[in-house]
Image (cartoon, rainbow, N blue to C red; front, side):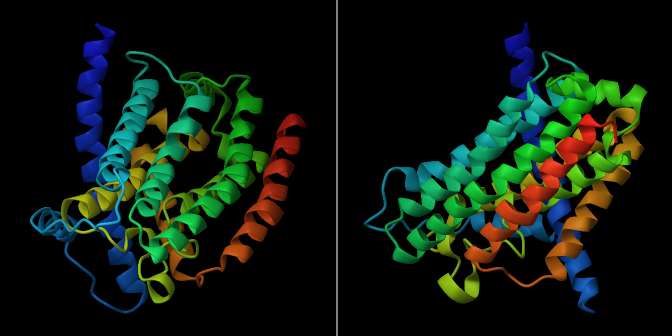
Length: 301
């Protein structure tokens, strides 16, 4: 039965992307440390940090709304379902997913982060939530535009069709328009996961972790887990969507690691942007490049 199959796929998605996300987060921290001439943490450090948070006391502000405790768990659930639908499209079982649904699902973790921060009642969290909302309005435009390039090239918005057709036509990122679109999507995704230079909603030195300032214990652990899982799910999606990851397991892993290293390098070579600078960047140059990629894809480049 498809419903039973998807239930097991969802369970597998949670464990698979949780482990992959925690290891990806470790690789991020390790590579960052090596770039700064430090040793860096062992591979199990993120697992230990997560377990430590599970045992910490949960402090709920008196001014917190009902979404304060619910938002972190909804964020993890949304990423888990996104990962399950992505795996379903890759394996063509039990069904394929349309691009529009994937765009919507990838937006949910940010919305739950905004909802959780807004419901805490802390003014700094409110500032962080406002910044996160502005970022969401900023990076979604070039992100969605960049995702249209493979649709133009393959003539389909079904993820399975896009994955499969790249095996015969060659991966989209090899073309001029595909490479531009992939880089635009990767930079937009950098903001989606709150990595430097787009960590404006947390900005520890300015608003003391912003949206997460009131979170502790298990809810904080779930928000961090959601972000690590989103890192893994998002990179997997971009690799298969632009780089024909279905060509082989080891090939897909290598492409995944290359995309992750690019994100880490951008993170470690750029200072945090102000919110106005980020908006000008997303609605300016990045959107221009995305539209250019679409036009080039229509020309067959």
